[in-house]
Length: 196
Image (cartoon, rainbow, N blue to C red; front, side, top):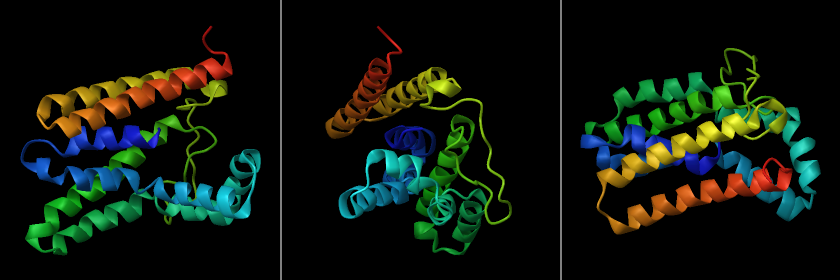
């Protein structure tokens, strides 16, 4: 799933009601599992100078890089972090729980939508990597359906957040992220020749 979609889903799911002040914790937790890949890309493209093809078809799949990415997508490590929040000061406990909850939600949403680019979500307990028959992007693995599901989730989460807030800047941000999601997938389908 695309990173902005994770943020919208986390805020809609975990930062409502009495937890509304913790929306930033939900966003941070939803983004953290993908942040290492952004850093990796900027380093490989900007500093090392690799091509897009080299980055995503070769370097990304090297064992050391995979271990780095998978560590941030490990359900056992996130659950450990969540369990340790019980030791935190009560004034910060709920924010930390929302943060780790958003990380876990990110993992749970990614699991069924990655085919050959998924993570080992059970490290360090297992090296097993689930290869879903559905991808959120790859047309060879029902990518159009995975993308459609993601768009529905984005629009649903955006609608929930929109109804919860009257803050103009939040509504502008949510509207922008929703429009960006629609634009990215529409452009991707058009480029791939999925729609005429």
